[in-house]
Length: 327
Ligand code: F6R
Image (cartoon, rainbow, N blue to C red; front, side, top):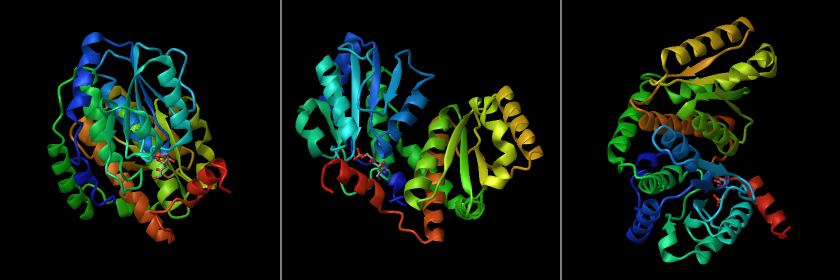
């Protein structure tokens, strides 16, 4: 499923009814956009939110809980995302959105969520994937809708998909770095992914992928916040087998680049081994998607090396069964 990441970016489209409704909502105006989803179904929203931040004046918030913030009312647009369409917290937040009279869009393969929405509210996803592996598919549709809702020009993702294919070939030759070289540094260690701005959700995604694919502990943090707390713990990283992995960006300004250099200097003085993943794209969008693909590859390679099946998530499924009263 990671192999077809670039193809998934181009799979499917947002149907015309939905786009027309988005145009209508934009013309009328809205107070904000609220993104709802859990786990693998939240990441596309987190990534889109980070990318849109510098481009739109409309506030975009995200919710990973049963309830929506009180501020969300009929003047808001709520994008409810659940790959299965049956996630408890997501369905509860959906009910909340309905009760408040918000404009709703649902992104799903089916399930209960699909039964609860109208034709011009639903974006149908292809089924048969793990939700986390469907990220490029969900992202392309959500990002298209969000750009439309916020009045931003459409983005052609075929160039990005082509870049990803080329970049992946180059990574295999170690240019600029191979996913396998990162995995080697992670055996029996705990990665702490650190990202700045649009790469902060990528760091979070990488943590989740190591958890779900390799069934291994992983942490994440964001810089500059890292420098105001996390850095104090770096003296114990080596003893705790924690390896900080900094996701670097071409877009870092001088101050941010200096900050990251200073941060790693302080941590090295504390005995921490630090890994850096250089920028893998030329703008925020390609950099983001390339870093996600790169870290996805690290997570499945780690799963292979640890001898675990990356595709199944039996603990998540067991928990859902318990909560559904099925044992
Ligand atoms: C499984 C996965 C999970 C699910 C989450 C929510 O691949 O990534 O994190 O995404 O349990 O389920 P859905 O996506 O069906 O709403």
